[in-house]
Length: 195
Image (cartoon, rainbow, N blue to C red):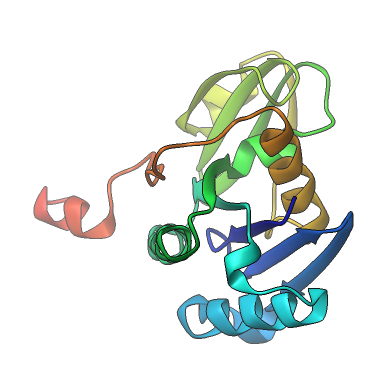
């Protein structure tokens, strides 16, 4: 199965291609910070060329839908939808916090700071596929949960992205459509509300 996985939700654009049990990856690093729209398609093209397949040979396209950068999420989701429409590939929706939780066990939370005193967080029971809650909260509330908190900083690795996408594809975890996961109001909404 050939699976393309995209993460534009963080500062760094991360892309992975699972093909013939090999993972091809591209990462913008610090030089590509916030230039996802100009890098994403060239990255996809380079990985497809390295794997020796065409875009029409993609079976699935996975995309991180959030939480993270609102603009980055829109870039990733719109690119994934466009590629799926052209190729007929199935879609897989990935949550930043769930991908980070992959491989963990028990009751735990994953947190991603979004403001100095606030984080996006997800609470898990069992493993990464059993998310009980996902929202934004003050750091004091997260600390009071009484569970182990795993901090997510930076962007997801290509290996983590590829592994999560492959596992969901094997489980038949496809989505009819990708919906951005916004856990807070956008800056424009906050300004309109007078905040």
